Image 1 (tube, one colour):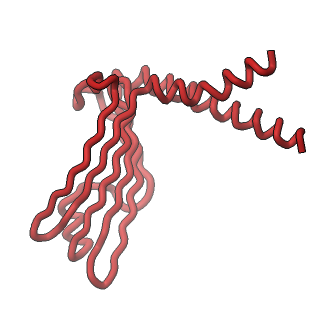
Image 2 (spheres, rainbow, N blue to C red):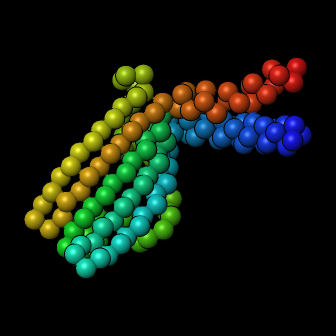
Length: 150
């Protein structure tokens, strides 16, 4: 049992180290390029159509986590409103001139908005976290493993 726990601990520390390194790379890259990872799911019921979009975007030294939900009478009108890709996972990259800096509040920000029109209603939730926080979180487990081993 002790051996299983040790192996699991090593595996989690290795995964955490990989996430820490990937976060550092994306942190540096975010000053020149915006990468947008998006997952879209559409659902249609008898009463309405819904499009759920989840996004992660490293930008200007931080990470933006975004959730958008749009409800409409039919899916065709939603596809006209939103230029989202079809259902599934998509990745986009473009130069870093689209966004400003998120340095205020030490890189933390939160935005919640609800809008509606005659044809649709939407909810947006955005959470910005500074990259340094994610590096610290992902780097804690490998650091603890290294200190315990030495």
